[in-house]
Image (cartoon, rainbow, N blue to C red):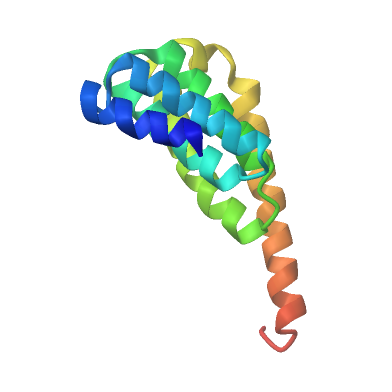
Length: 135
């Protein structure tokens, strides 16, 4: 859409990690989320969180992790949710280890881990329903 086009244009002229480009990508992620594309919103937000962590901006990185988590909760497929959740929790745990705001807010991370347990159960139940003959 328009935000992506503007983002690509800005990325070419300013560079992919320029603060304005990162803000435009946040907007792209938010629009994707509102448009019912949580997968795209998740990937953009998680990628932004990695960039922000590399730039040593723990507040912004954690904000992006929270956006990714919101998008992740909107992903309905349990197997997809497990794969994405693995990436999310890995980065989130690294942010906690860095200190900063993620370390002050451990309940959120716990709630993500709890969702992973539920997704594992749902994925297992689904694979048994698809193939009841597996031991």
